[in-house]
Amino acid sequence: MAPDWVESAGWPTAGALDRDRVEARLDRLVRTNRFTIAVVFPVTGAVLLLASALGWFAPAVAALPAALATRLAWLPEALAFNPWLVLVGVVVMRLPLVAGVAPLVDRKATLALVALAAYAYGIEFVGVTTGWPYGAFEYGVALGPMLGGVPLALPVFFFPLVLNSYLLCLLLLGDLARSPWVRLPVVVATVVGIDLVLDPGAVALGFWAYDGGGAFYGVPWSNYAGWVLSATVAVGAFDFGLDREALLARLDDCPFMLDDMVSFVILWGGVNAAFGNWVPVALAGLFAAGLVVTDRFDVPTRPRWAT
Image 1 (cartoon, rainbow, N blue to C red):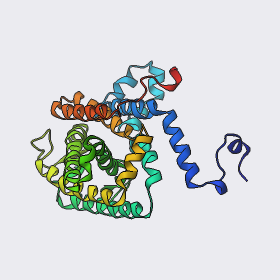
Image 2 (cartoon, one colour):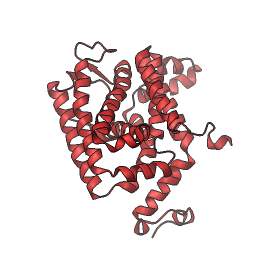
Image 3 (cartoon, helix red, strand yellow):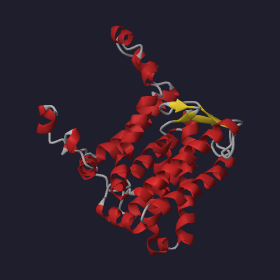
């Protein structure tokens, strides 16, 4: 029997759970907390990541009164690139996309997602162990639990980069998106553009490093050749698994569906700006412009608690 507080709060008991109710609650959770998820989390995440990379935590603790600094001496090491903080923050920022797409996931979409997850794990393992197709690299920070040098939560990091690009391109292309000869290459190019923002910032933070560095803010061009391959596979999987007309209808009904891309622009645009990576900053600005043009950069400007 469920505790009284569960029933009084309106949450379904274990026996009463069903997909529609879970999706409706997730939808309501995201709608109610859009500013927190899309703005507060990426801003906080950018500050914490920069503090970790630049060593801000230890001086901040040392500046406290001696007794308090002694008690908090453990804090810098606990906060710096904490893998669980990184993972939880990413999961929260993904919630708008998950809530938006969840009602459209049927057996065909599930098959595509499972196949794409297998590809993502496989190609990442090959990349870490052989250097193909992205170039020789190694992780410098644990992005949550790792197995064989690969983050177990890899789909949480990778899938949204592709799906956000797919959704934005559907909106920008309009009727042109009906042609796969237009839709697919444009989305693949957009995914590679996303990585032109992500990878320089991640390298600057020390998330991973390429052997010998690279010409584009420490990233070799081979990485982007690898991303063309992986983006093509991933875009093809989403194009196969998800109904395009249903996606467009859901986009019309779900104003927060691209909030995860808003978070991406804020977080990685901010990180790159902090390190003076101005080309990635400009690219992040282009993605922000795309969100504005499609009327998706409409996150409330004030948090719910301030109204």
